[in-house]
Length: 82
Image (cartoon, rainbow, N blue to C red):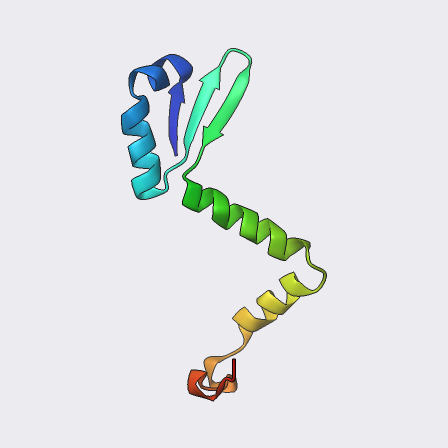
């Protein structure tokens, strides 16, 4: 994570935005009244999707169980009917 001040951000805005977009590296901007974080649109969308899925009852537990399932216990992708 990049840490900067509002003054430094103004001087290097384009470069910091490019770095945030290209590398998904958040920028924390410190001001006298508090801090703000700049994230790429891709990272923001991923966070929103995670929050959405986590808010659905049972979905979070289903994902955890799926991650813990050994691959040998899973069916082959070619057998899945969409």
